[in-house]
Length: 279
Image (cartoon, helix red, strand yellow):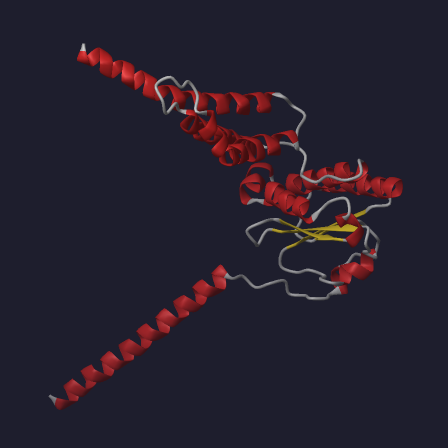
């Protein structure tokens, strides 16, 4: 009987050890999957091609014909303007800092790095002279617009890279940009919402407080910093600085007026309904 008891105890201990080992392995595997290993090479010139080319597509994001077309455009743009554009795509391996010597990157260079392992496909390494015409906020917006996972899923890695290059070339060719040109649908919707909210604030502030008062201009002026920021800075500003199209501006103005009128006229309709109910 004692031998059976000891055997049961030993079995329980072994089972506990196996369970702990299994859980540890699961945690380790989860951590490894959630944090994939970084690029193998930190400075590996062996990954660089022998022949000079402005595009090194280690991750095979670009179809052959599109890559050849982009190479021609980059070389022509460099010969015409002096700005140096380079593209590096990577996944498991990267030449790392070796590309700086390989390409001779300087203050007039823009290096686009495409890596699909992170939350954003794109990253940019920009020379000091480039910041004089394209500020840091431009690069943050460019990365956010074309490198986010939703844009990449809908358009592909190759088009995200190509569209980013076209945007950079267009801005450099005309002497610089403070913001990324073009107004995406989701960004316009956000400006429309802020315009409507600004109108609601204006309508609440402009409601008459006295019987003989039509518009409470004093309160509207007091709250003007709030509705002005919502409508002008966040509603109209991002639109007029990114596109010359008047239609989004008109829609945002109508949204502001609609929000203001709805809030302003609601008490009048309520009072009319209450008076009819009493009669």
